[in-house]
Amino acid sequence: MPVGLLIAMMAAFAATPAAAYIGPGVGAGTIAVVLGVLGAIAMAFVAVLWYPIKRLLKRKKTPATDAAQSSGGSGVGPGAGSGAAE
Image (cartoon, rainbow, N blue to C red):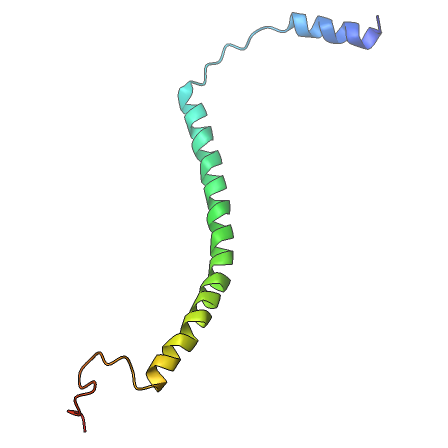
């Protein structure tokens, strides 16, 4: 048996248990921190991607809105088609 393995086994069996109790609150806090960091990363990723997607969606909507306004509107609203504004 190699000497290093023998020393490692002796050190493992000679270790005494720690007289420390950290409680369940530390585990819950650790889970909360991990979820918070993952949530922050996800929100940053969404925030970085959302602006270009929103701009593309607005660009697709804009020509349809301009076409409706240039053809006299949709006939909805004050004075639309009644000649009252003239």
